[in-house]
Image 1 (cartoon, rainbow, N blue to C red):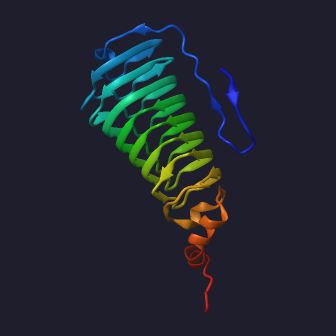
Image 2: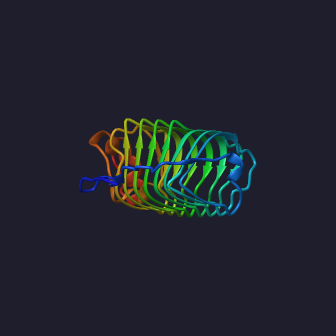
Length: 219
């Protein structure tokens, strides 16, 4: 896999999948260990996929209403065209993963670990990454209603041609998180240390920053 990198920017690996074996969605069960498979189509709604292990695989065109992926371990894989109004994947691990053309509603990824994850052309509602550790994550052409990074550790995260409407950075530890170009409401301004913002963004939150630092603004 070739790696794209710039100092301070997400380092995203290009995924080159091998020849894949076609499989049925029925293969996706709790504790399954799958490698080198392609699953196209199926309904995963309300399915318990706790502890799923997936390697060098592609899952596309699935409906996944209230699917449970707690503790899942996914590497070098592609998720394409998912419809998942509720996705529960706390304490899961994503490494070298692409999520594309997907609609996610309420997504629970708290206390998860992400490394080299790329979301492309996705619409996301509430994304819960509280207490998670994320490194080298890129959102391209995505819309995110609310991103919760409360207590998270995030390094080299960027948003290209994307929208984030609300961000919670309470107690977050952020390094090289590039927020430039985003128009968002922010909670927990004290957690913004380590982010990259433009002058207009800083001006818009100046009053809250001053309040956080105990600065009295007198006209």
